[in-house]
Amino acid sequence: MIEREFIINNEIGLHAGAAAKFTQVAGNYKSEIRLIKNSKIGNAKSLLSVLVLGIFKGSRFKVQIVGSDELEAASGITRLIENGFEFVE
Image (cartoon, rainbow, N blue to C red):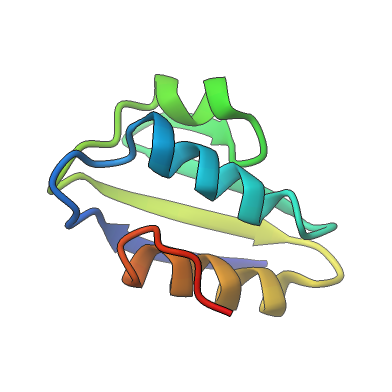
């Protein structure tokens, strides 16, 4: 299991567009990927689940990854967040 903590720095947070990119990237991996904000847990592969968490600018949250490709998933998700939700190959 890999768990990493992030703080959202983009102006409008994990809004619909960024959340859609997040779920798209998460969906590329076999691993189970969860977002955790405070005591709420969301499925990172579900747009509605991500949006319900209310991750806005300055929000601190964790990404928890469990599975056969967890290292690759952690790397891809970290790149996406660090690049302000712009896709980077």
